[in-house]
Image (cartoon, rainbow, N blue to C red):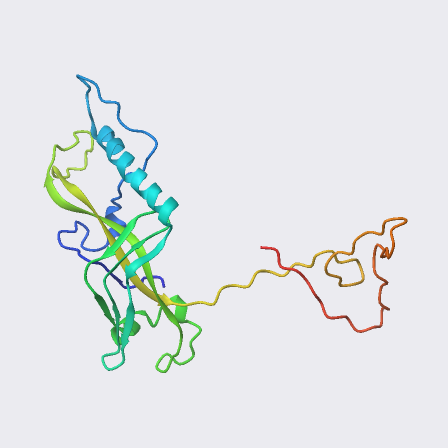
Length: 238
């Protein structure tokens, strides 16, 4: 959906009040290079991010290469018909980038309130009667991150925006749950393979080999122009 409802394990102290699109905090992921420390070395923010990204990146690379992605435990989904509510149990999972998705507490979503908020979304324009609609929905689990713990900081004198000397000192990773309408997978476009100009043939006939027994002609005989078209067979290349 255009704006799915999201929940998280914890949003306490989140600098963007739960809207992580605004703060765009993310941990570095660079497993190939580490800092070569030496005496008297001048360290800056980028150096610390390289050090952080080396360890974070190696862990994520290990998890996606050795363990893959998916639910490790938990994340069961239940429907309470009496309360018309979805409940997702606590659990732990890995996404395709090897990032942790740990839900510490169960999350619930009231379906009537969700439908009132999203019934006019673009995904539901094809429903004729939205007061008596039936459709499939799916619970989606994604990775999210947010800035937290604002602390005093030395302001950049070249910024020129008059912003106070405050910066967020934490990046908090969290799972993000959303409910959206389920769509059937799109069928691949069917492309004929080896069709001649007047016939529908699949697969392509093998060319005849001189002297080989039971050699077949290079192309089948064409049907008359007034004959009904034969059933079309084709192969889907994806």
